[in-house]
Image (tube, rainbow, N blue to C red; front, side, top):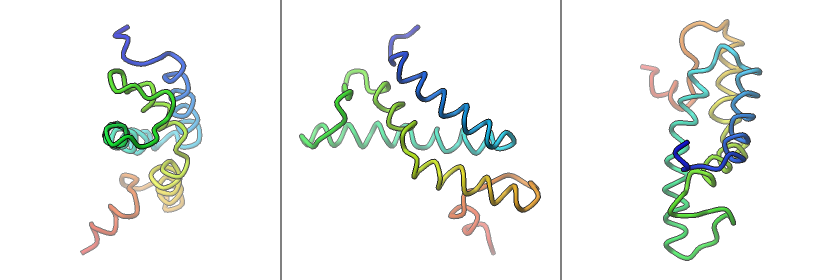
Length: 111
């Protein structure tokens, strides 16, 4: 509607979120927080790399960055494992009490 992102990139991203939500239905907040944090970091990184004439993905367009950003996020399986799969599995294994957290965040909360 706002023409800031391609339909293909949104569908790719939506499939990834749907898959995560199917795997971890009680961890929607964790999925949201991970994605929210990562989207802007990817956009900034690609903006800087482009400005420094480094190699960026073919679909990168600094005037319309979100198509590339959503595609990159959907394909970042390492980030997904670190920020969603591992914390969600640990939270589930612990009986699903409290809010699921990423290990680095949890270690900062320990007195």
